Image: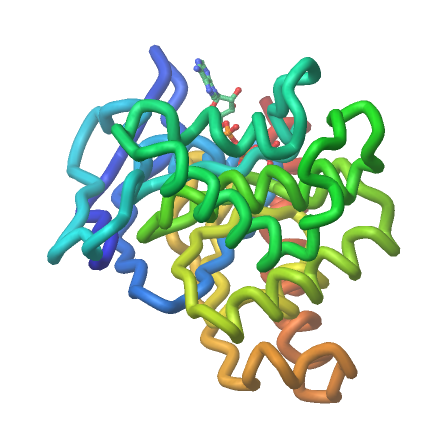
Length: 255
Ligand SMILES: Nc1ncnc2c1ncn2[C@@H]1O[C@H](COP(=O)(O)OP(=O)(O)OP(=O)(O)O)[C@@H](O)[C@H]1O
């Protein structure tokens, strides 16, 4: 299954947010979207997930939804969105409740995703007993429980401190290496972009247009030790972001 975006433009009233975006998101790939503040990254993710309809053009699923996927497009947000009165297992079971699974099937899925995210011993813990990093691990486990074809991740690590971010990036790479998931990952953080992205989509300032798509061929598993090649890619991305941010600043100053 792919997600295709064709000639997509979007506006809110008089504000043009996205302009003529054409992109393809491939299975088994993590595509990272970066761009200056307010350029439409989160809007693009919402349009991809069908939470809003684009003003022009389309975002659609191409190909077959993989068998067994309970929710093909699943979001992970920065604020974890866990119910405080439910345990870790209870938060995960919530997303399974509408799917007519037996208690045994649900429990098997919950145990599987808790094992995959190294959370088995926190099965009965409440969110308030967990650190921020652990809460986001639970949110990732909950997303994996519905066997998504695509994870739509909106700055999932931005509420966390830098050490926890590093650990969760390692976790995501390990999860991906074990069972290749597909994801579209929005971030401001260029370190995350080059650590996790098979390709990095650079949007221009608003209205967001695709300025460049940078492919990174270094395997994800080999990126923990940052090579000179990875540093070069990050520098190249920063140069593009800097130009866009400076141009946006000048536009505001001229307005
Ligand atoms: N529901 C909405 N109604 C009106 N305007 C909106 C709405 N959602 C977003 N916008 C505006 O659209 C523009 C793009 O917002 P969006 O959140 O997609 O950008 P972003 O690139 O994700 O921003 P950031 O990097 O700051 O998170 C902004 O100017 C924002 O104020």
